[in-house]
Length: 489
Image 1: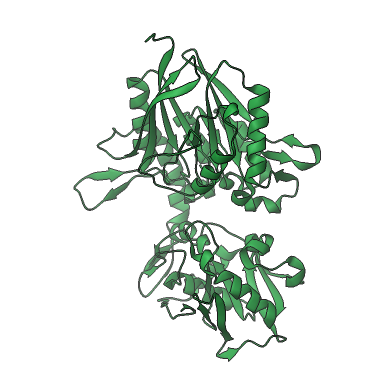
Image 2 (image 1 turned 180 degrees about the vertical axis):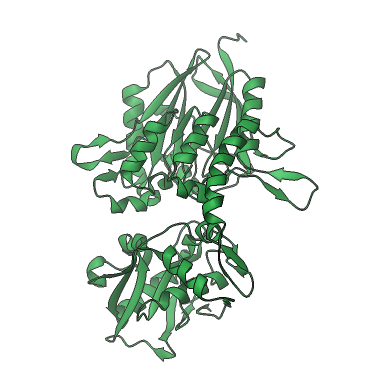
C-alpha cells in the first residue's frame, strides 16, 4: 500500500478538566501518583516525540472547579493550557461561568484555536467563535467543528444577548451547513468536538447525513468513562471521563482516497507515574499560582465536630443538610432548596479552611426569596422528587432544610405527603422559599415553575459563600446528620 495514500495519526483527547491541575498521591501503592497537569504534560510531550502526527484536543470545560481557577477567573487555566498547547479546543458550559465579556477576553489570551459552530449573538445572527478549523497535518486536511447545546448551556440564560440552537436537530443542521459550505473532497477527516454528553452524542450521530462525512465525535460534559468508543451511523464516539487522571488516545489510519478511517485503536490511559515523567516546567508555573492562592486561602474558617460527607448528588447528605440549615436561618424561610450539584466535594471538615470552603462550594451566587402558595410548593416537590430527577447526569436534586419532610411514592409516581415543621401543607396557605440565582433563571427545568408563578422576588444575599464563611467562623463544632427529609417509598 502506498504510504502517500494511508497515514497514521495519534489523537490525544481530554474533556471536563475543571482546573484539575494538581496530582494526587494515593495511599494504596507506595509513591503512586495520579493525575495533574504535570504528568499529563509529560505524557503529551512523550507522545509528541515518539509519534509523527500527533493532535491534542480538548472537548470543553477547562475552567471552574478549583480555587486557583476561581481566584484568577480562568486566566491561570488559560496560561497553563497555553503551555500544554492543544491543537484545537471547543467550548463547554463552564467556559461561560465568568460571563461572556470575560470569555472573549480569555479567548484573546489563548494561543490555541477555540471552535464552536452554534453559539450566536442573537441580534445580528453572528457566530460567537470560529465554527470550524481545518488543520493540515503531514499533507492531510482534518476538519474540526465545535458543538454545544442548550441543555449544557443553562448558565447562558443570564445573558440574553446570546442564543444557541436549542436542539440536537438544529445542531445537526448546523453541522450539515458547515460541511456543505466548507468541506471539499480534500478534507480527509472530519471530527466533531462536542460538549453535550455521551447519550446526546449518540443521538446526534444518528441524525447526521453520511454524505457530510463526519468520522468521529470526541465529546464531554457527561464525564463518561468508556471501555471502548461507541459506533453509531459509522461514526466513532469517545469521551475521557473527567479531570486529569486519565487521557483518551486514538491511533488511526486514514485513507486519502476514500477520506475514511480504515484502522483504529482507542485506549483510556491512566495518567500516572507509570505512564510518564512529570514535566517540571509546568509544575513551576502551577506552583506560582498555587503559592499566591495558598497565602490567601489557607486560613482556618472554623471547625466541625467531625467530617461531614456528600457522597452523592442524588441523595440527602450530611453536608447538604448543614448548608441548607444555615441558609434557612438567614431569613424567615420555610423551604430552602440547595442544589446538590452546587456542592462539589464529597467531604468537608473537621477543620475547614477558606480554600476547603471555596473548593466544596465554588459557585458563589445570589439567594432569592419568594412567597408561594402550598399548591405551587406541592407542584415543585412532585417535580424534584420524580424518579428521573435522580438519574446520573439528568436531573437537579436538592438538599433541604430540617423543617421539611416529604414522602414520595416511586411506584405510583406521586407525592404522598409534604409537611413543614410537622404540619401538612395547605393548598392556599402562603410559604416562603429560597433558591439561588442560577436555579431561579432556570426555574422551569429545575422546579417546574415559571417566574410568573414565583411572583416577586427579594434578594436576601448576593453571596452564599459569605453566609457560610461567616457562619462557620462564629459557630464551632458544627454537626449534621441524615434525617430522612426526603423519603422515597
